[in-house]
Image 1 (cartoon, rainbow over the protein chains, first blue to last red):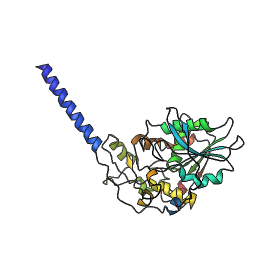
Image 2 (image 1 turned 180 degrees about the vertical axis):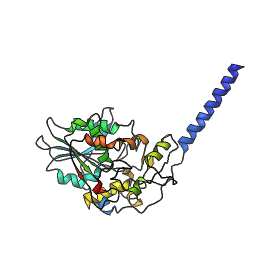
Image 3 (image 1 turned 90 degrees about the vertical axis):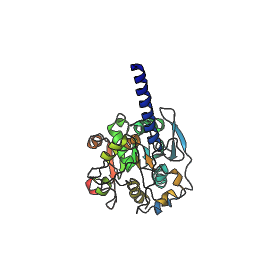
Image 4 (image 1 turned 135 degrees about the horizontal axis):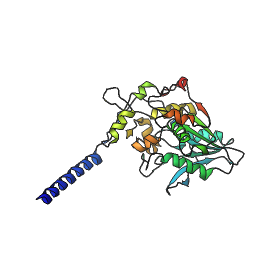
Length: 238
Length: 63
């Protein structure tokens, strides 16, 4: 009798679990409403006709990230790794990289799961994987005794700050932060952005997201980090 | 997970397919300093901040 009851409970729990999994997997991701966003004309009008081909660089997990290289390099010039902002990829820096190629050995990277046709776009395997990738990229491209400069824009400005405070921080010599995003409630973040929050997932991330983008008791709306990037695009290319 | 409301001008453009419009929690967490961001900042080597006074997202004077 007890065995039968336990079996029933186990079956019931299994069915409940499957229903929860099904709900999570099939949770609809709504298309966000169009917004009055920034002017991207200049950024999108960038001439990419002479864009260098991407080269793969192998990371510690055996996967590769795509980089584009500018300049002849040499230990007398610093290695300059440029890391793009949210939602975009290394092409953002094409014009700037060409300008800086006489002064540095320039490497543009597409962060893992970004750019052209990545596997599992928008997701990484573990927190701090971007830091590990950046360390692997530096080790793969820096020559002995070459100065290492890392430039990050917007969210990647924040990533460079994170990198400095992490386990690989000692391997960079200089940092350049273009409009770095620090935290939703940092004094450097405009309030209208820190108050906008959304959660498009039914996963346990829900609670964390609401905390991360506090909505001050209001119904969560949407969040638009691309505007961070847009502001930077205009500064760089405008 | 977060989702970006990218302008249709971007998504419908020639590079629209290269945009990444959603991030997982892991990626979003890694794409910013740690919660105690001042501690990460203190660990920076020599650095420069370049930002614009008319930035719509950030307050240049607060850096």
